Image (cartoon, rainbow, N blue to C red; front, side, top):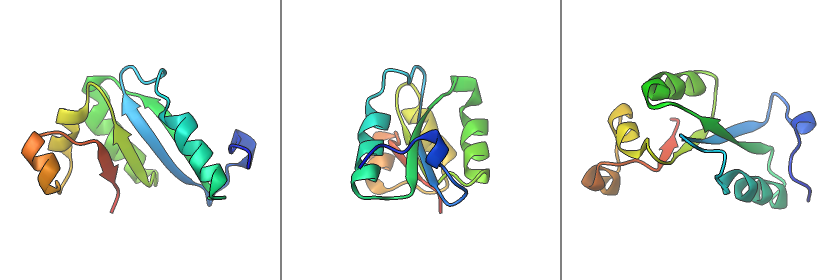
Length: 103
């Protein structure tokens, strides 16, 4: 399986991503896209560089646009935990979120 290319992204493609600042160094997109390709899933994982002051608007906008889920990296983990409607017990206990699921 080859990783999904921009030309292969369609209206049915599920979009996932990682939010961070910086985020360009993250290995998550390569790893996640390889997994999607290996499983022949119609999905893509995108890095989104987001400044702290834009985090809330970015999450709201990406979810409004239909993004299926997001991972959060430094420095946004604690702030992300304050922006979601529900926290699982471990996230509540540590005051940080790593994975955001749109429901």
